[in-house]
Length: 233
Ligand code: ADP
Ligand code: MG
Image 1 (tube, rainbow, N blue to C red):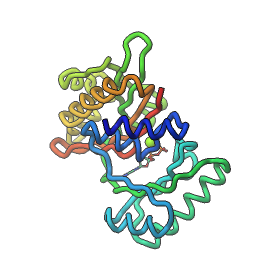
Image 2: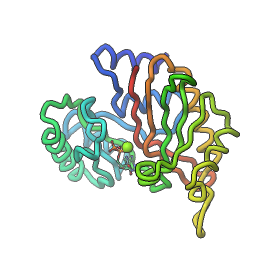
Image 3: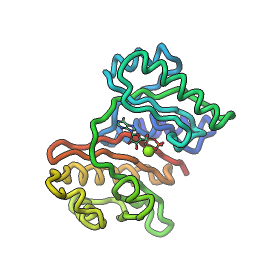
């Protein structure tokens, strides 16, 4: 219901993708743990939001015309004080305009800085034969270079999701290697289930989506979605 409202608002503005803030709101409707993220339209708003959220914060460009924010110099992490927020606001705006002069910029997202964790990717595609399908893989070079990912048709049960974690070549990184504590496999499996429910529910609306990265912590400590993307049909 709320998810559809967010989607319909974007459509009414002629867009076929959601901003990170909107996508995180949709994810939240399905119980996915996202970093609290709010939109600032000017420096003063950004400072007020950063204080509310608590330092350190992360700031990112919010524009339907910039889907890969880092490429546009549109992401700053570990901002520690008010002066840092003001400086980041100016720099991100300048970078975005240089990257794409015609970009429609909604503002800058201010969000909680999540602690470091193992980076994984969750995503979905709409398979022409099988319909909404979940993807899981490790982040960074594992997905970009090695294409070390695995797929399941939605809905995905918790035990199927646990098997997905074991299927990738990078599985030992989740299981714990060389004295590194094992990651929270159960939390990750649960989130894969919830994500698969979301894409089934929104099958008529969403063509593809991803949570990239998701930071996964030690067993019992859960995980955090720090970036979200939804492309509409
Ligand atoms: P892009 O649009 O380029 O994918 P991201 O939102 O994924 O932008 O940000 C780039 C990187 O910054 C992420 O891969 C992650 O390492 C880091 N990052 C982003 N948001 C956060 C956050 N809230 N907490 C901690 N690290 C973050
Ligand atoms: Mg990302």
